[in-house]
Image 1 (cartoon, rainbow, N blue to C red):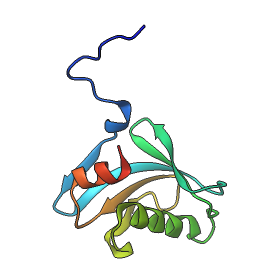
Image 2: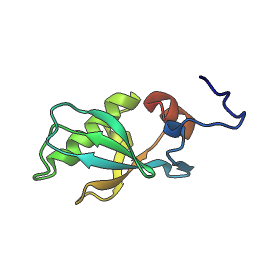
Image 3: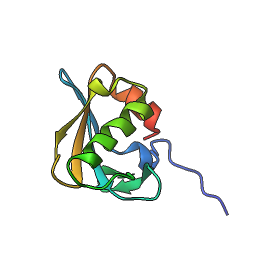
Length: 109
C-alpha cells in the first residue's frame, strides 16, 4: 500500500543545514576514520557521516577530508577548509566560491 506524500515533503537527505554567507558555504560532518572505503555514509543529526580511509594521526584524516570534498565538489583543494573541529570527529567544513545549492546538488543532500 502506498501513501501520497504531502506537498511540502522534503526527503531527510535534503534537511542537512548548509549555511551560505560572505565567507563561503558551511556544513557539519561527523568523520569515521580508518574506514575500508571513503564516502558519505549517511547522516547523524544535522551532520553528514563521512567515512575516510586515513587514520586520525598527524592531520592525515583532515587532509583526506579536504581531498574528499575537493573531489566530490569539483573545486580546488584551496577552496576547502575545516572551519572548526580539526582535532575531533565533529567538524564544520567551509567551501568558498560555490553556493549552498551547488553543494546540495553535488553531494545530493
